[in-house]
Length: 414
Image (cartoon, rainbow, N blue to C red):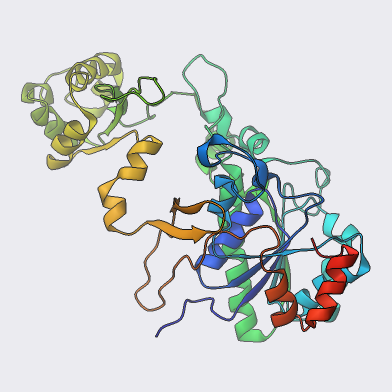
């Protein structure tokens, strides 16, 4: 049977919160053995974040947030106040192909696990630090969180309505984006090592990863000396390009009415003609107000009013079906209920259900790729804190059962 592409690769995972765990999640999805190093004295903040089953926080192991981004990993809980715990971490580092952290620059060095120390015991290791601002530069020691990096990257300056202030992108976009970039860098370094036998250190800036996605905004300034204008849901070139109100969801959720919206986009005049026919107004294709892209942009308010009038009395699904049948890019503005019940995602097996010791089987997002030659799967649910202490200590690191119990009694194992 074919093995996943990173089968046989072991990752010593010092990460926490979101960017780092999202990086190691990709590696776990690809078949790597990922061992998280955690502690009860300062548990990962995501273990304490909602959502929790039945909206009750009564355990460090029930966070849906943590359990989503740590699927397929193992947890080794160590208390670094004890030298025995540090020795266990060193044993893991010596037997790992990759060491990952997303602390601020220099933090891991202060803990005693910096790259210069690591490569002395494991010269071929690939090590990456996904810090907020990189290891060098005047901001290198600044505190960093993804939500603050969204505006710092320039994304908020591009987001918002005309005449309104900058807006947040809706979630901490910089975190998972950095995780994907980090995973790509690690895989590239492993590929280099396979060819040359050489390990290396990767200094990665989460901020730079976010800026990397916004080249058009930066180029508008560097090439033309002006800042791009915020245009809300509209596009600088395409029209129509926006979201349009549909019928509300028939049933309320927690006694709240849920409004429904559809996204409609036309990139050229041919698509506009198909859209006009689909809404029963073919004459709009030759209407002087809308016949060309430039004309549609000049009359975008009137254009959106016509589309809103057509979508308002209809269900989202009916609008999407009709427009997609006509070859028009339309899609629901999906809420969480819509996504979790979507038949397309279900048929493709995107959602995963793995048994978790404390929350049972819950729906989680799975792997968004399918590989014909090296199939990947979510092996297990996210780990309980310290769930794999015995397995890792005795099975991998060579400790006897008696030594493990002695460390546990001393408090070196959490």
